[in-house]
Length: 369
Ligand code: M6R
Image 1 (cartoon, rainbow, N blue to C red):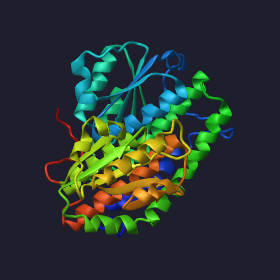
Image 2: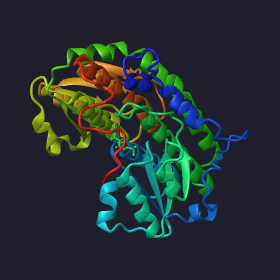
Image 3: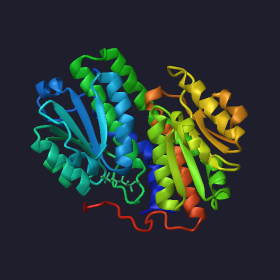
Image 4: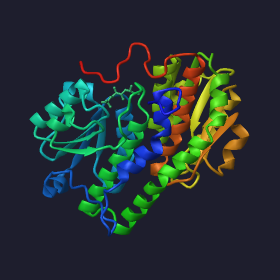
């Protein structure tokens, strides 16, 4: 059933072009408008929404963090992302104009389910982004937008993550269409960019040999740091989580802008650091700022492993290794940039001889609080 792959995780990483394509499939009409009929929430309610709170755990929460950047930008609605187990214990400000988006692969995560119940008790509308049909979270929500990643077996989530981001983008574009915050041709352009993502993921998978080699050579490192900025920040967090959970290596993700506020003190000779570089075509000179972060840590002896957009030559002088990913719109870049990090964790854990699919102490779905 592993289809010739060494592990389910490896297989699921390679399934990702399909997970994204299938999640996009059938969600536009012939005129190119988004039709999310499955969201059976009164359009008037969605027009009135004045705040979105994403509740989720682990990888699903990082998908929510990526979605926040896109939904705020496209819809001009404030979006908070809250770990589901923190949400109901802080007396959150939730009312009938709040849309709570619960993101979960399994649909059975108890912490997320309890957050859903709490949100509905407070009068919020709850929309679930879930992969598993017939699971509990969609049953208890007002609406569900399914991700079509197919069953995910490995404990470490990969294809579900990409499908969650894709579904959350569809939700954001749908809200933008409904509320008129983006013109139809702008929405159509973003959808076209999204439809190109599966082939671009495939290109990253086809180039995986270089990452594999680096991962195998690094199997005995005690710690790896991950830096990212803007949408690259949750990607860095996810890269660190993957490495902790399956390779048992100390790993931490940081917002690159936070470096000088503390984490740069950790940099010493040979400390491996992954840096997720924003597109050079992006806004606000973020690219230049992250490139100068690479320079700063390299000057302190770090080993820099850079994930950058194809053609980005500015990173070359400061990178010990570069993993290029194809060009796409800045907001969609996480769908590509995370893939080398998933492969890195999977290959490193395999090189250590670990059970990649069933890491110690972890269960695929966490059904207790
Ligand atoms: O089934 P869910 O998406 O609700 O699960 C949430 C987390 O438990 C899950 O993403 C966990 O962090 C994964 N093991 C990450 O790889």
